[in-house]
Amino acid sequence: PTPAATVPASMLTGTSKAGNTLYTGVVSSFRPEKNSGSILSEAAKREFGREVYVFGAVLERGDAGLGDTVCFGVHTNAKGVPQASSPLLRLAAAAGFALIGTYQPASGELGPDF
Picture 1 (cartoon, helix red, strand yellow):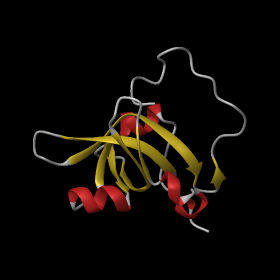
Picture 2: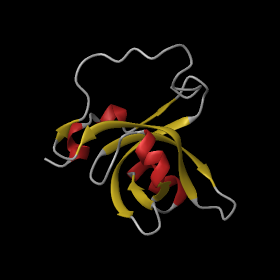
Picture 3: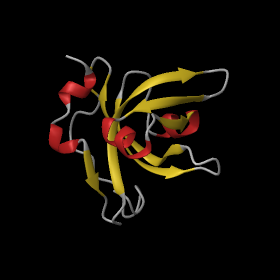
């Protein structure tokens, strides 16, 4: 199955503790020369009409790469383009689950959205 198929449908969108919408999608492209890529999220695409732009630094902080399933917030940049916000959380790797075990963040480590 594709990485998106490994994520339950109930996780495709949600709301953070701060009340912001969270999306789930797959890193569909990455252009090293521009240090940026795109995330394909059906829910975000319905809302914004396009894939979500993502900076390489946001992917790097989330330890995510091409083909990985990620959870993220969205803001629109000055040009009105939907852009993935940090923090971005990798849910599944292209070859299977990305995380094994239990993660216990320090107080406030993940920010107000998680």
